[in-house]
Length: 211
Image (cartoon, rainbow, N blue to C red; front, side, top):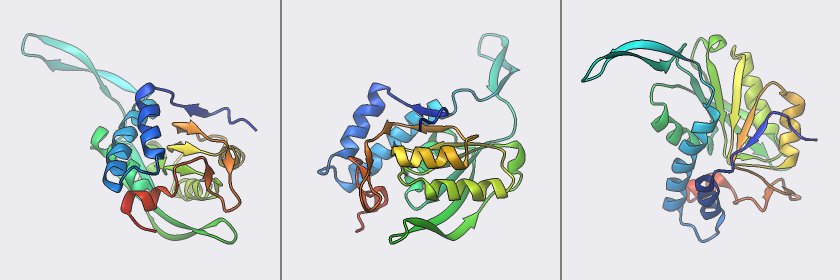
């Protein structure tokens, strides 16, 4: 099933950096740097239609009305732990953003998420919330995280990932058809243990050098 809200960012720089991240030989430090860089590029896409309003400013030469972001500061929600890699780059792009965290780990037998941590800013009901996780695999962790964000009051939510599997896209479309998904790639499938193929491995392990 196609997700009508799915956007694949095909910009050459995004695709080049993603290819470097996919390579098995890419070292941990380089992987983290690439993740930070690609998250900023993806951030341009997912924030493309933010509201702006003109405000008077003074340049060195004259006064003018110039566009600035309108409304309350947006919220970034990291799905721990791998979401922190995307979060760091997005905070460089949007340093004034509020930040929330959803801690989930995957039950390897049932391939379902188990929550262990939740911390959200207040006043989500009138803010744009961008949830981030590098991999949209089975989709259950992403859907569960968005459930928590909605319970906290958010009504305007977007989801950002590096790589998605068709199965995960379908799960998000089924559970949260109102949430646009932005990704750098839609890969072929999941393998028998729920990893994206061809994918790039476990993003958290590759970010932090763990097994």
